[in-house]
Every structure is written in C-alpha cells, then in structure tokens.
Image 1 (cartoon, rainbow, N blue to C red):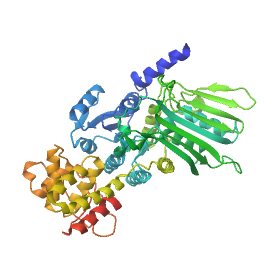
Image 2 (image 1 turned 60 degrees about the vertical axis):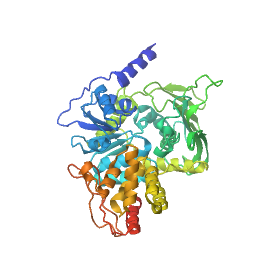
Image 3 (image 1 turned 180 degrees about the vertical axis):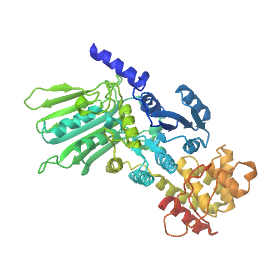
Length: 528
C-alpha cells in the first residue's frame, strides 16, 4: 500500500501540482526560457519542472499559428507569445529571453538551434540533437565559440536510478561486464501513421526517436563507444520505405577489463510492438540489462524511473536484491527529491551549468556527436535504410532540380517553385540562392506565382518580390541583404543579428554571371 501511495504522490508532485520552490533566489536573476513550438512534450519536459525551480521562468512561446501560441500561453500561464511566419524568429529576437528550449521536429533542430545561438541564447534541444552527426558537431562548435551552453535533452541520464546502476557496475561487485542489452519498445497504437515521427523529411524514424535512448544508455554504461555494428535490421513503414518503425542492432564494445573479451550489446526500438494474441496491448519494453562475470543488474523503466522502477541485482552464488533510487543518497550531498522527474533533474543540471555551478551530471558535446555517429552507422548497416538527410544534402539535391528546370522558361520556373517549397530546409536553399545569385527574372516570377497560388508567402517569396519590384505591396524592410567579399575561398562570415533584424544573414555579393553566382551561393550555404 505504501508503494501505491508513494506512486501517486510522485506523479502528483512531478507532473500535476509540483511544490513551490523552497530555495531563496538571492541575487541571482531567474533564467527566462522561450519555447519554440507549442509541442506536447514541453509541459512535462520543461513547464511543469520549472514551477519548482526558483531560478527558472517560462517567459514566452512561439508557434506557426498565433492562435495556437496564445492558447498554449494562456493555458500554461506564459507571459508572452509569438506566432505567424516570423513567430520563431521574433521569439529569438526577444532581448528578455536567456534560454531557448527547442522541441521542434528533428529536421528543424539544427536550423533553429544555430539561429538561437547566433542570437546569444543558451539552448536546451530535444533529442536527437539533429539529423546528422555533422550538424550536431557544428552546433556544439558554434555554441563553444559563442561561450553558450548547449545541452541535448537525454533526461534519463540525470536521474539517480541510472546513476545507481552505473555505480554498481563501476564498484566491481559483479566484476567485468560481458553483455549490455537495452530496449525502448512502445505498444502498437502509441505512434500513429500521421505522427511527425513518421515524416522522413523532418528526421523521422524509430531509431532517430526512441532508438537514440537505448543506444545512449548502452554507450553510457559501457563507458565507451562501440567498435563495430555487427548487424542491424529494420521494419519499414508501409507508407514510406525510408522510415523505420522498428530497428534492432547488435554492437561490439571494447573489453571492460584488460585482456578480456569484447562486450556484446543489443539495442531494440519499436514504434508499434504487436499485441499479445494480436489484440492485447503489450507492456512497453523499457529496460536495460547488464551481464557481468559474477552476476547481472537490470533497470526496469530507465526512461521514466520517477513513475516506477526496479533495480534488480543478482550476484552469482549470493542472494539477489531489488533496489530503488528516486533520489541520491544523503551522504552524496547531491541535490534532488523523490518526486523529481528525470526532466526536473535535467533542468537542475542545466541551470547549474548556465549559472557557472558544477551540475550533478552532464551530457557532453562529444557524447552527443558520438551518439549521432552511431545512429548513422546503424542505419548504414541496415543496408535497406540510409541515414537521415542533412540540410546540406537537401541543398545539393535541389540545386540539381534548379539546374534542370532553369532552361524551361516560366512554366518550368512555376513548377520549380512547387518542388522547392515545402520543407524548411528547401526554402532555406532558395532563399540563399535568391540572395546570392543573379537569377533570371522568370525564376523569381515562377516562384512568386507559385507561392501566391498556394497562399504561402514566406521570406523567400518576399525576396522574389523585391527582385521583381513588388516592394510597395509587401513589407520587405525586415528582409535585408548585405554585401561583402564572398567570392574568395575563405569561409563566409555570419553576421550577428542587429537590433530589429529577423535572422542571421550571410555576407555575399553577386557577379552578374548566373552560373558563377550559383557557385557562390552553393559555397555559402553548402560548403561553409
């Protein structure tokens, strides 16, 4: 009975009605957070945990739909909201905001994290950090250059439960590690066919979403990166064969002791685990199990241990025991309460890092990059599935499209607009091309016609309007273009957003030659 009462107490304090912060704020001003997108994950991951943290204020939210942003802000008592096509950038431009929380779809993590960093904001970005390891590397390098904190939100890593498992392994009680197995498999119906996690263009896929957890977990407990992907298999989405709805992989890690055998590991992830007898929902498989030379340790529910978890320790030849770790031991001196969720522990660590204090634990940039590298290697080992495409690859592909349609005149330009619009990464390509190159008038006209035809007036459309001389019909003052020396081989510079600017801009100049300008645009956006 006591465990049942404790369960409801933890749920209430962690996710429904958290206690007011007890610590005095002192001279330290609270960090004001801005949320990109009215995402479902934002309340449990940030808004509710922030209510019990004296140094955090959820200050603003932005959404593509201003009505949605306002509704979200009023529901969660957020002071400011932004919306419309420039809503995200308006949020980044708000001088009151110190930190940006980025829970956007995976394919938008890179763009908006880079923009937030360019605007001098610390960033808490949802996992996975981006679509590719290269994008993740660039994000952390830029954050380091700017002297800002960037954290990938692997929240489970901050909870005492996984820390206790690692402590048991590191103690040597069970001797050397021989195998590590982790899974995060969801019951059928948890992720629908129309879920954004099923959209390839924005970084969808099971391995990208729930698969990054078990991969991160086995790497953390092995204290190293794998040496090889032995095998990988994937179940393809029936509507898009590029998307995996389930993936499993066998990995090898270095020996845990000198002269030992390589550590074997398996990971599994599934968006739609089949039910028992075909119709009875299956209990989620959310566990990690470590086999050692002298026993084993298993943690059930490593992603959300605050709900309920068990740590089963089975030493060889000795009595088995079950532990629970909802908070750190008192002798450790580490902060935490039994009702703190993984997200609350993560928020505590993030604020400590921003404030210059030593956090209980941390997810390093090297760790984030390596996790994306091994996600890519698992996809590649699956053979039938490739890596998610980075924005850079999208740019290369659509340059080819533009080259093919350029000679076709206005009809071709019209459909060029149809092909190039849509995903944010594709619009970025056209935007840069319009800024950097002397594009023939009919290409601008085709894109502009298409955008008006579909009622999708965006920044790129405004640039086309400028080229066509339609300034008086649209407010183009915010879309400024700068000139500079971009024809040289040196890296193009990204300007700091000035007061009133809407986004970072690249210094470019046009030569008047179409193909030469296209090459400059290619270097600025793709090769930089």
